[in-house]
Image (cartoon, rainbow, N blue to C red):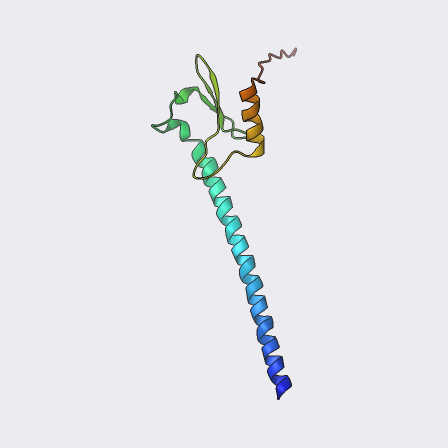
Length: 116
């Protein structure tokens, strides 16, 4: 009788462990899916950001790059590298490197002629 109780309890523990592992897997998949949807939404909306009312420049002078920065704004007196961020997103390491290069003035213009 005692071994039957131990067997039943062992089976219940095994079932609970399997359910726990499955639920963790589902939660992990949902978190990944949410991040993926958020990323896709961000990539889609950043293409329209130059056309919102609060955008401080002429949107016709904006050129979308997409990566590693969203785009470049060409003004008569300056060129502005622009990265749009929403919510609590932050610059990634590559974007920080680009920002630092610009801040240090390590940006150059080159002309390359191709003989065809």
